[in-house]
Length: 112
Image (cartoon, rainbow, N blue to C red):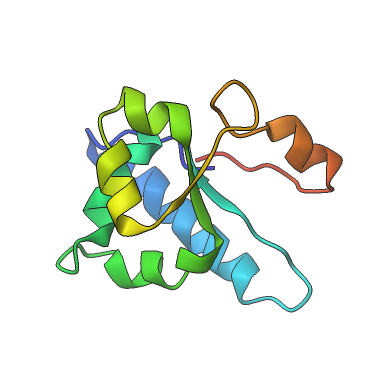
């Protein structure tokens, strides 16, 4: 889960660490991956959709496994951009992704 805001160099570092970790799992045989942008992290999707962004290609390599929190996309003003990008939104838990369901399904949840 990418929760990092878009405000600081440290936030960018957390994003990149999350994307690099996700890529490592995506490239490993037998690992399943769901990359979820949640909270302030939903703001990254419109930025990463920009082909000029330094991490656009890394993000694109994970695009099939990417989703976003529906509630937070609206709360952070990026719902339309996320919809335009074709990113799936999740709303299983009062508009948010269900972390409990992920754990129940055997996922280990990592947050960045």
